[in-house]
Length: 298
Image 1 (tube, rainbow, N blue to C red):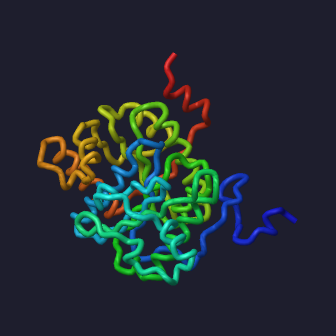
Image 2 (cartoon, helix red, strand yellow):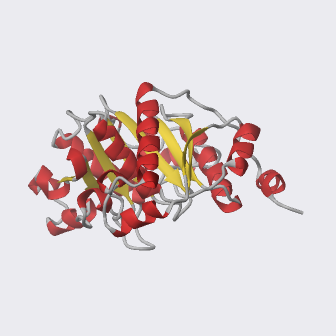
Image 3 (spheres, one colour):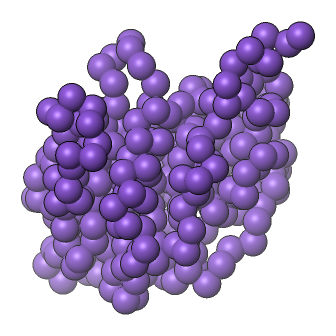
């Protein structure tokens, strides 16, 4: 008998050697378009997610953004504050979710975007996948997904842990934020491999990448051409984006400066493209040595 046979909720493989715990099938998100945003740590996933949420709201969509990072800073430009996390609120009621009300963990942000911060266990303890699962369970129990058009998961850093890949079990499309440099593209290559593994058992597929804080996109485009991926958007390296974070605002709340308007237009274009549907991509990630040779310099 395989060791996996003794462990509940382990069905099939999410890639070679995986023993990832699967989410309860009854907790599947239905009726909304679900996007998971990934990328190297510090690349601007939260900035991208929040401005994308704001853009969807300007297209008339009912949006829910779920931050999946113990730092719980995914939604602060939408709400103007660091809101309490689901895991912290559950602790306050001794993990009795029946005692919670929606307003305890769902907060309204800019232009009606609803914001949730899942949070995470203390460093070195627990699993992020559990927190994501509990968050979705609470949202479903309180019918918070019944009147939602778009759900955006903003996920912690590079994917090396099955727990933080858990949002892929709910998503329709995965979006990767990158920059025009080796480290960001290297991380993107690993994330592609993770999504491809999840797509074996789940509906999630890759939508493409967004080049962020990059003057040029030549290296991103060269990588995409090599593996069969696609760049969906390009957010330039402009100081307005940094200032918007400092002011705790999305770009849609900032003054109508030329750079800000240009970025808004790009976010609106990206949101419309995602809503209208993107091709399901199946790129072939490169082995480490090959990506080093592709992007490295002699």
